[in-house]
Length: 235
Image 1: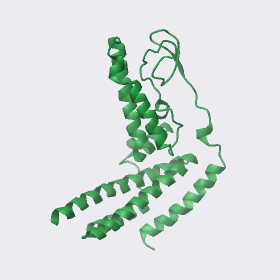
Image 2: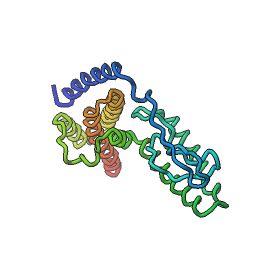
Image 3: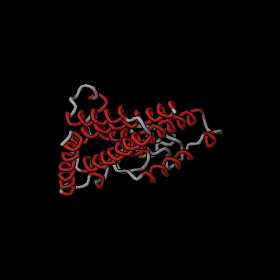
Image 4: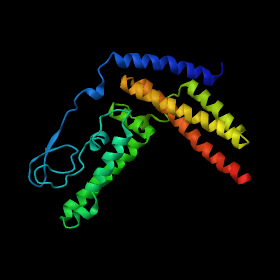
């Protein structure tokens, strides 16, 4: 059994356990999140943290400390509804469009720009599975970006990456490259599915390991596209 096959077998066992653990626990997405209320800067009325407008006077609010999920009205978790993400993002974009604030005070114009910047940051993070996973791990207490380069990498991940890299380097035809691309995309899809299960089971250590694996797979996917361009240049 080569390293890739061995790692796949190991993942299947862990995935089954993660699903069993998740079924035995209360789904964290089902628990109500603590709602922080602050005073509106304009009328002093109550405003929920992350709400872009005051419900009393409709004044635009500072972005505040709301997390990306709250900002886009999504339940916290890795397996998000991408259609709901898109719908929420574009709805908020329309509400914060500069034309709506053309006659407002300088403060409201500045706050609307801050809200738009925070909204774009939230969307870009949650729309990218790798960035979403790293962000969610951070909310759960693990700063993946800070650990990157310092934490030891699972040897099986390294072996798998080496084998897939060798296959890419040896690809000399479009057919060869197509096979590598198909395999890589399949592994990325599997990894993202396992990440969803790991987060649902609150298995943070497993999630962090999978985030590392997804980074390697995404890098390989990028290199595959570069290799395709190189082969086209030779034709």
